[in-house]
Length: 250
Ligand SMILES: C[S@@+](CC[C@H](N)C(=O)[O-])C[C@H]1O[C@@H](n2cnc3c(N)ncnc32)[C@H](O)[C@@H]1O
Image (cartoon, rainbow, N blue to C red; front, side, top):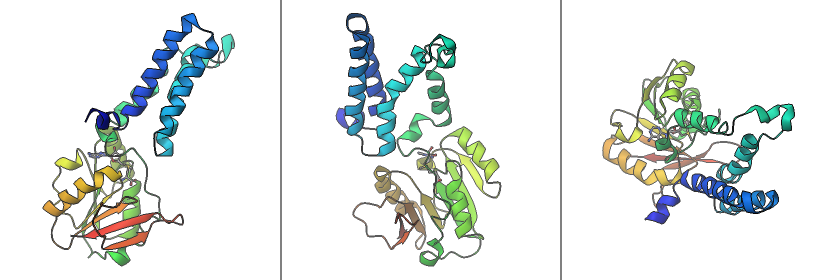
């Protein structure tokens, strides 16, 4: 239980940064500056290799060296980063947490749906004009834009955990209705198609929710991640890299 919690993103990155900084501070007084930097960086590299996705590796491994560079004033007295206070590196982190609350990290970070990724959807999942389509975790609206391209006559809705992102997306996509809130607390009953681009771990829960709430004949659609042990009704290709879009007819 404790181990699986420690694996829940972004805890591995936060623990790695804390460990690296702890090591650095402990070694700084007694050892050469080379050791007090090399060991924490090595810890970051080892921990990053335990992550499966490239962006998580980068965040885990680069957290310490980047924050050290900012806080130690790399650039010397001549200016550059030296003007930044030692806590300066926390500012972008704080901004990130406000835009993108930790709760949302559990389901997925802000990765956009590519513009043409959903063009093939209507062939596999045709919808009548005026059908209600929902992007759960609509981020900055890229999924909504791809859905609109695929279903120009649909009524598009989005829900997003991050309030600033929901606000921003409503401005970017005035033709859609965006709600700030938790997708798990939302009722999906009235939607003909629910689209998501989340994480593999999210899929079983999303499928159970769709089965419990959505009407017979409606669709659950996921970019890249399948529902484990459930045969999709159809799979279409999202892009030239062969990324799949999984379709489940309920
Ligand atoms: C990978 S992004 C996808 C964004 C968008 N759907 C797209 O395809 O371009 C996932 C988004 O889901 C949001 N999210 C994660 N968990 C959520 C939840 N429980 N309720 C609402 N939004 C959530 C995140 O904040 C993030 O913006």
